[in-house]
Length: 146
Image 1 (cartoon, rainbow, N blue to C red):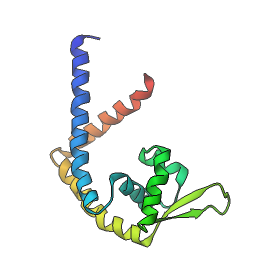
Image 2 (cartoon, rainbow, N blue to C red):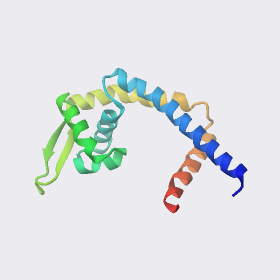
Image 3 (cartoon, one colour):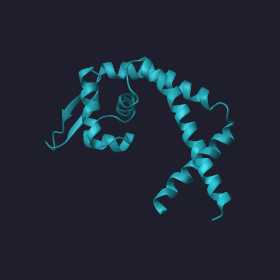
Image 4 (cartoon, helix red, strand yellow):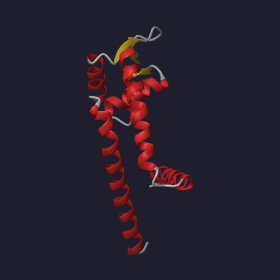
């Protein structure tokens, strides 16, 4: 591989990282204004859209270390946004379930959240968005090959 190829790869990595950071910071403003951190929002949004989830599986679905899940679930439970429920078939499994208060909060936040993301992405044409999706998937899926 040539030095020019390496430099282009490094530049792509830096541009991708900076774009992600800038977009993420902007999107998280709406969430933080509502008194949640991004991880708490991710857990509530998961429960809202996918239903009850075993605590042991939440981390993998929102890309969070399993040790942090207990802390986040504790905070959300203290705020009244979710509750733990035992699995009737297996006492070793505990599920997180969104409460009515949590559901109301997500229903308040999510439309503004998704609209903000759409506004940030409108700089790209639909076909450019699809190209970016395809290329980033290809990049992400290739990681396991090295």
